[in-house]
Image (tube, rainbow, N blue to C red; front, side):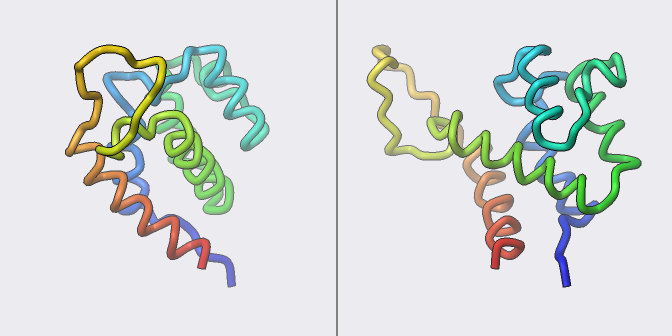
Length: 122
């Protein structure tokens, strides 16, 4: 039996992904390409709203399978592209400043999401 991300769990992912209308590090065009690749729909283009509102609008009516797929794909993107937020040991060669980009709040939410993903992945 397939498992899905529940609506309650979805809200945890959205807390990690949506930042003042933005979704992670995506530009409008990148977000459209990403969602088209993931679920076959360019969400920003389809809904004509901010990336965050377009994502929420899609998730409201999407099937459990598509909701879960998109949230898992976004999570994998976050892990791959934004490790500096959740890993205090992360070192980036191009980041030459003394400013730390680690964020304890993001790291806490990341760990909650990771536990959900691990449950789904078995």
